[in-house]
Each structure stands twice: as C-alpha cells, then as structure tokens.
Amino acid sequence: MNDKATFPVHKTEEEWRKELTSQQFHVLREHGTEHAGTSPLNDEHRPGLFRCAACGQELFNATTKYDSCSGWPSFFKPLDGAIGTSVDNRHFMRRTEVHCARCGSHLGHVFPDGPEPTGLRYCMNGVSLKFEPV
Image (cartoon, rainbow, N blue to C red; front, side):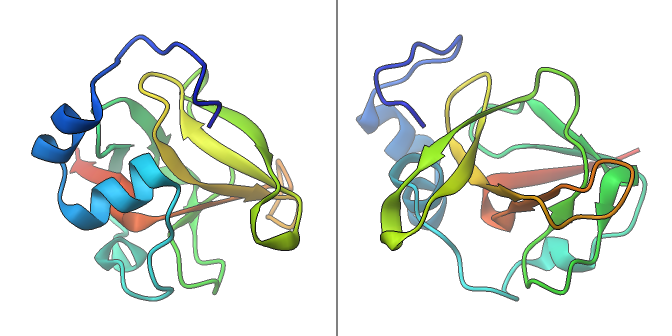
C-alpha cells in the first residue's frame, strides 16, 4: 500500500487499533502475514461474498475462490474496482501487493500462477477478510 495515497475511508492509527483485533491490525495496517493454514476461511465453500475486514468493501465473490494448496484463501478474480495493487520489495523479493481500494488495507499478494480464466492467484490473508454468506 502506498502510505501517501488517499482512500475514500481514512482513519487514524488509533481508530484502526480500536476497531480491529491485534492480528487484524498487524496484517491490514502493518502489512503483516498470518501463518499459513490458520484461517477458517480456507474451508469456507458456501456461496457468498468476501469483504474487507477493515471497512466492509466487497472484494471477492465466493465463485472465484479455489484451493491453491498455499495455506491461504485464494481467488482467481476480484470484484471490479474492489482492490488496488502496488509493488512490494520487502523480504528481498519483488511481489505485487493487493490492498483494499476503499481503505487501503493490506490484503495479501497476487501471483501469476492461478487457474484459468485469469491465470492469477490472489493469495489473501484470511484475517483480512470477512465472509458474508448469501
């Protein structure tokens, strides 16, 4: 996430800390990563929507979720206009970071090794998402 970017939802660090759990704050606001295989959303297969855990923005339709065997909830396509990306050079590698287009919260990364039709794998931290069944 570009910390200088302006997003429609903006809150102070103190406001985010009050609204998020410590793990959510670490991942969403400090670009952290949860441990692989720990998210209950890995086993979520019902129809519905995955939303940003920070602001509620709709991010992914459950029909685009698949098991990537990575240990994190993975999707092959976000909803139109739901996410933004930026270059992440942390950890001695170049990756494409995915953030919420509405609040700028860090969600995960996107990789070019996903299934058709997009060939992309949006590898998301489960703690950064909330599932809403339909």
